[in-house]
Every structure is written in structure tokens, then in C-alpha cells.
Image (tube, rainbow, N blue to C red; front, top):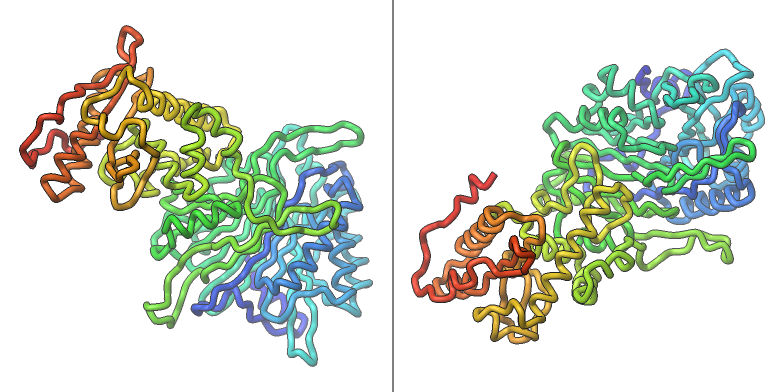
Length: 578
């Protein structure tokens, strides 16, 4: 793999370099339009392409029309997706990016000799550039087509710069190893101190192994297009480890895959991949907008927040279903911008569209299906309450579920990098309860267990069997609630009285139950400065568990009921809770 400046390629044919909006480090946000297509493909020794030709032509044509109408600064489709006839016909019809815009289109496979034919046919409409390789009629290429405009309005020229996949994907049948003709060059767009490069699926292997990630990590936007049934496989993650291991916080990564459940046809034989989507946006800016209202707005439209602890980065995953996404994004870095307006908020999803077969168009949806309305029934009689909270703010619902289960490790447990369901490790398995499209067995078990524990706690609170004196005055008139003003309490009465209630379930020993209660008590002690508020919060702390006789019982129910002192002394050192 050779990282080649686009300016060098253009200079060889007498062209200057484009000034791309996405690479100008000013305070003006840029927009991007992404397509995550429906996966019904066919693969053979002739290449990889969409199986339903008519549908693909229609969907991708409408997508390019949307790209033109929205004036998106960066337009991306995944590997092997854009039909060449759609791209060619649209450019001939004048559906092209305006000056300063860049289209990065993963195209269906094509043989090198066929690309030569397109280049000649296209001469009146666009200049087609690509690296020189010997034609191999027995192999196909896996191309990415960069489309952009050069020159002034009165003397402009469309350029199609084609980049070939440089490294074959490994599989049991050696499909690409046997049939793919690989290139050598990965093209780098250089802006004003920001650079952009794109990887095609397994290019990521060489990108990590050959040290390119080390050279490009700073002030870079990396686009990674894929047709990948296992996007979080270990080797595919290694380049992300390299990109984000350095300081500087000025690297962003867009991974764009096909939608979930790809269907692959080889002749008349169909293979179901049963894959996750895996499209995601990774970034590390210190000014990232992590306010609940911002992330909840993204969530509603289909962009879901997680914190990747292994990379120390924010990772926002797209809904797994087929859709197009229009986002407004802060530049990778700001230079010469006053601090008062320089804040790297991250991507804001402004619009999600799904395909409407009747209208033959991508139609905007008010909200995306995150899967939670189907799963919420696992919480039994609490389903209406937790659903109500999630519809208003899914992160409040995640916090309530965590606190109800006793999953707290310190007084910052509710911040997103510490909230257990929002954290992903190096496996990138997503445990979010209110975004439940990840089909990993551990993630499914986690979500169901957490909801069931909430349902059991709700029944305890509504019943007489395990009622506590300290909760009698709010019994029967409560609702689930989480507020940043009362971060360690999870229910509130109709009169505004708050309490902390926890159910430790069937899988907790007495030592663990005692530990959790001490941590919760210490969180409340630290948070409330007023003696009366502190005393009241401790009296309204209740923890239940199932004992050795299989009975649900409260743990030390009278522990704080009679207290009349300020309790300045700590029972538990949160800082040593691990």
C-alpha cells in the first residue's frame, strides 16, 4: 500500500488540487450523506454486485439526486455498492457534485479493461483517472470512485479518481485471493492541515501493519467502506487501535458498511450472513457534545452513543436497517478559530430516510426503530414506566435500569463513560438496553436480565410483602425518574419525594448486596450537603435481594431509619471500590 497525494496525481495531467469544504479547518460545519444499502448481492468469479438490478439502479439514482439536492459536502456509499451505470448516467445527465464537494462512492466490481472503456466513453463528460496496471481478464477490481469538480464555474471539469482495493479479504473459499486484482495506491486529499484518506474493507490490515496509521493519525478524517459480515473481527479493529492510541484528539473515523442480514447469492444458492450493521463514527474531541438532549436527538433518528473504553473514544453506531443518513458535523480540527466558537460537537444526525417502494424514493422518517419497544415487555409491569422514560430520554432510562440493578461503582457511575450499558470494550459488543439491535448472545442476555430485574423491583414496590416503613408515605404513588439534580435516586412520588431502590436479584451474595448498599449510601452522603437532605436520602435507600430460602427480602431495612446525626463519616471508600 502506497499513500499517494491526490495533488501529485492531478499534477501529472495538468490539473490543480481541489479545495474541499470538509478539509477547511474553520468554524463552519460540513454535511455528509451516507447510504447503508439493503444487502442482497451476488458474487462470482466475474465480481460482486447488487442482485436486484432494477431496484439498485433506482435506489442509487435517487441517492445521488439527494446528494445533489442537499448539497452534502461529503457523500459516501459502502464497498461494492454503487452500480457503474448509475454513476455514469448521472454524471452524463449533469448530476454531479458542486465545487468544494466530494463524493466517495464504493462501486460494484469492474474489470480493468471495462474501466478503460468507461474512461474513453466518458471523455466528453469527465476525466477518469486511476493507477496503471496490466489488464487481467481473469480478475476484477474493487473500486472506490472519488468524484469532484475542478476549475472555475465557467471552465469546470468533473474528475473521477478511482482507487482500487489493495489487500484481499480472507475467507474459507479464497474468493478475493483468487479473483481480485489489487491496486497499490491509497489516495490522500490534503486540505488546510486536514487530510482525508479512504480504506476499502481489508485495506485496513495493511494500513495497520505497514505503519500508515502512525503517519496519518493526526488531523485526519479516515473513511472506511466495507461489505463485511464481521466488521468487529479482531484484525479489522487493529487499525482503530493504532489510530486512536496517540494524543491530540484530532482523528475521526467513518466506518460505513451495508445494512444487517446481507443475503449473498452464488448462482441459485443463497447464503444468509446474519451480520450486524456495524456502521459507526469514532472520534475523540475534548469538546464533544455529550449532553443528553443532543445524544437523545441523535438516538431518535438512528445514531446511538457508546463509549469505547479500549480506544478512549466516542463511538456512535448507526441503526442496522437499510437507510440513508444526512449529518451535520464539526470539522476534524479548528485552526485560527476563536475559542468561544470552537467546539468539536461531533456528528449530529439531521435526517434518516428509508426506501418507500410505492413512492420510489428515500423518504424521511421522524424516528428510527431502535428495537426497544419490542423488548420492553421483558420488564413486566414496569414496561409502561420505563418505556415512558426512554421515549423522553433513553439515557435516563439506561441510568434508571443500572441503578435499579445496583450497577454502581462510584459517585460518577451515571456519566456516560462510566455507565455500564453505554460502555463497549475491545470486542465492540453493544450492551445498550434502549438500542437493542446487537444480536450477540451476551448482549441479548444482558438486556433481558436488566429489564426483568426492573420488573421484579417494580412488583416489590407496588406490593405489600416487602414494604418498608421508610417508603410507606410514597407507596403506590411513585414513578421511575432520573434527574441530574438527583443522580443517585431513581423513583419519585407524586409529591416530589425521592428514593433510591435497588433489587440485586437471584445471583448476588450477601457480601455483594452489602457492598452495593454501602456504595449507594456513600454516593448519597457525598452528594447532599444539607444534613436534612442527606438524612432523608439515606432513610429512603432500600435494597432487596433473594435469600437462601428463595425469599425476596430487604437488606438491613432499619439501618438508616432512626438516624438523627449528619453521618459525616464514610462507611465505604468509593475510591477503592474495585
